[in-house]
Length: 322
Image 1 (tube, rainbow, N blue to C red):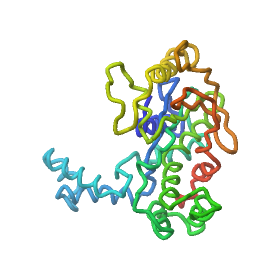
Image 2 (image 1 turned 30 degrees about the vertical axis):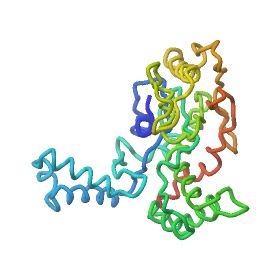
Image 3 (image 1 turned 90 degrees about the vertical axis):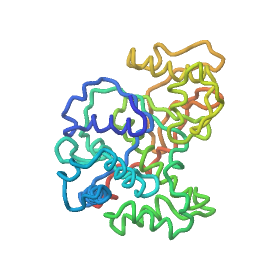
Image 4 (image 1 turned 45 degrees about the vertical axis):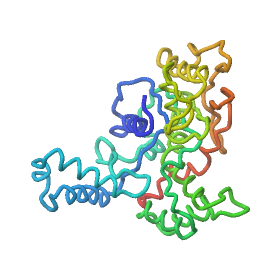
């Protein structure tokens, strides 16, 4: 079970050695599966060199780094992370060609993943806002941002992104501003399309969800997942603490899944805001039919945040390699 990068780690376990390596678990819960895809050898080298320079070891290699003090390495690490583009963290799993043969989303799309697993997978309702640069205000800002984020993409691919998938703000588009446009792209690219891809890959074995308690930012579902009776604040930096019966109902789905392989067998019943039967996910062209938890309780909804744009991200043309 993992959230954000923890769920991204689970994705890597599932596609290890092209999906031929037993992950040693039969069930997995992936909450907001997120990762910053690192697929370009030049970028990986640049990442290492940035750290090397920050540690005072420019051009001196690993022997110099191994001889450095813990304080020096910590300071270099902080400098490297803080110098990364907004919403990224510089470090992340990289393709080595053996254990990790390609990006998890692309491996799953090709069928190169371990099949014998049941999953719970989902996301919050507003995943992108935490990672989207608020300074992106104009069409030019958006164009610069996608060129920076996808440096190997062809001009045709970049035009597809900015003209077809995420068109300019206007009366005829869904985006009120370029910031909303960018936030939606980041939401799709980093989290929600991973959720949809996992649901597609594990069709008939996947229980999908949306955590819809406002503001629904990335990580806010942890307030329900790890709710406990002594939480005495009505809100945190992640958002409001959910009603007790909602939180314990949410937890009962997960504990039931751990115990029985289904979230329904031991789910909580008889509370003021009751749980409901959680069917297996249904993937449609417009999204995924999923369980939603919001302030009013649990319901079965169309999760249109995992829409047809995910087919583009699952295709991999943005890497410049296909």
